[in-house]
Length: 157
Image (cartoon, rainbow, N blue to C red):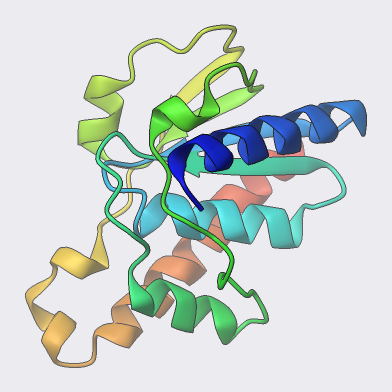
């Protein structure tokens, strides 16, 4: 999907979520390749009746293959998901914005119409040296940690 179609799709998805009475959350990380993709997928899968999650990065680099694999293990399919630039979400209003890495927290100091911004950092398993020696475990650990922290946080809201 090209950037323009991706932008239109995301805007429509955001409008549909609001029309359905859902709250919206945007997860931002540098590459929109690991952490923000995983957070978006977990929230959309677990809290789909109350929340619509979105993700983006300021240097999108494609979804890491191990993200797709460890999410597939728990029944989440990312085959149609793409890595998105923050600009693709222009015109969307979010109830919460959560940065997941320090770079995103420094770059994203303001987002139009934002109700609440938070920074909840997670380690990027793709940058870990042991990735070459059983990296799937690192991605599973991230998945489980995100689920343990993000889902209860949003369930309270």
